Length: 124
Image 1 (cartoon, rainbow, N blue to C red):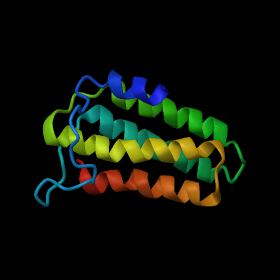
Image 2 (cartoon, one colour):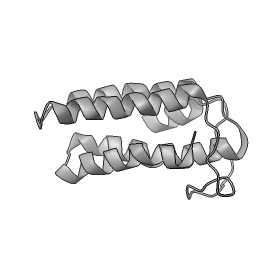
Image 3 (cartoon, rainbow, N blue to C red):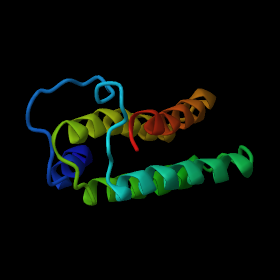
């Protein structure tokens, strides 16, 4: 239910059944809006801070902070076209990983870190 709200909050939500695989723009990175790049960078900082503090088990605060930043990315979404579609292909799996923080396994944090870092392989 919450996911439906989040997706509908994006002014340019993809209504078609487009490709769901994250791809480059003919071998180049997609141009992303500043708010999105800042949001992903903020999430990386949150995760780094969590990792620096050690495994204190406070996944709920980490999850809450990540969800707030994730929602801001959608709220500030101004991307359109293929770049926007590719952003959604990146963000939907990210939300699934964040949701796993309800009952995290050690691999969840590694998966989250890998996915956040992957943003910079596809977007600039």
